[in-house]
Length: 497
Image (cartoon, one colour):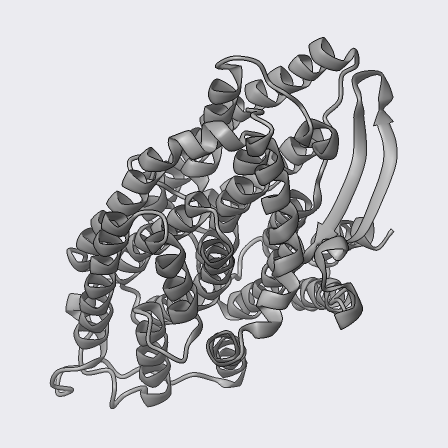
């Protein structure tokens, strides 16, 4: 039941925060923080020992109960190394979100924490669900509260950004729902019964071109959430207008559901169509890397620059998935983790600056290094982490992706590597515009307080650990990668779609 409890704790914590906020908003913050910390502690308790880190130990724990048996739908949750890492990332950043919201959110505090925790619960459910209908339910659960977070507590154009986010995600989700239902019906035609069970669907022989169209239905939904150019236009608006915690969840967690979906469903369920589609995916990935870097450099809005940098970074994840070898897939997982940490820190810094200066325009900043040296130093640190400085997590992920992609397509690797140069330019441009220059006219702002320093220190430790000692993460993810590779290899060798 521990997988169920991870979700229930977040859902119940959100309701409890909303209830106690009527008497004291401060209590709601503590209830929210306690709920996420409890879920994080339970998740850490699932970290595997060395005895299960082998090809047969891919799945660590599972839970299954009947839900709608007439339609082959069950409450089926399971955790492997890959989903464990992403669940821990979600809960870790959830703690950061609660801390960063402490002073920023002063209105409707209870309802805010309800939506925050329910978004986290939906994301955890996405990473754990192995019944495809249940997966879609959690996919929708994380959408609605995220819409409220942007539209109620966002900035000047929050309603437009929230509606755009909702339309893009909902439209692509409907394509995925059609593909899920069609996949279950194909299974009925072939085997005589309807099922949405992931493990049953892995063994299915899909006839003709049907597999290719079903694969595209899943791919579009995950590509929009990743996001992939040209379906990325919702992201800069949503990031820019969301409250700080909303930006952290969007960049650190929600984008990762797109990468997870590609790794978990698109390639294993449709290996031959996915491998045939790989050249198109490579082109889209390279386009995202280069286009995102160029657009990031063109921004004057701090948050919008970081948002476009996410488009560039997640292009590497798309390359890693469709290169489909151990190095590339390991790199994609590490890139998702490292990007979640470093970009969340940059959005947190952007939120702290906006709270103090009431602007996101870097043209109105400058000279802040002498005014807030701790804030400026941490901004510099996470900027160089984002550009891929050796010794930090982003470097390891991008290096492994490029190494794995080089074995498949040399030209794609060369073009993607150019994006690393772009990352250096826009990252250092960010630091120079916001923190350097003469301080004569620089606004006087307070430096980081204890709670803000604690949040950023947690993120600092995480990104350094991923950069200097990534082997534990690789060890936990490797059984999952071997399991998925074995499924794909078997189906391709057998000539199955």
